[in-house]
Image (cartoon, rainbow, N blue to C red; front, side):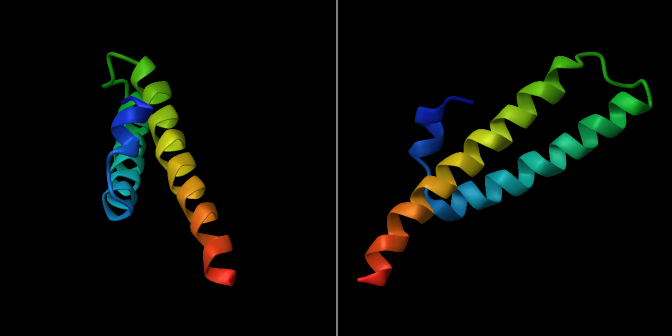
Length: 70
């Protein structure tokens, strides 16, 4: 998933996406431990996607915080 695709989504969509990706990451790790996962690079990709989504959410929250203090 590209950052440009992530930035196009709303905050609610991003929070839902973060939950879904985290759940999928957990399932993928479980499959890896039970030797059912063929593509182990999928774990790394999911971890990075979760980090990208959380980074964009944090940026947006920080932009809104100074405006709320004024």
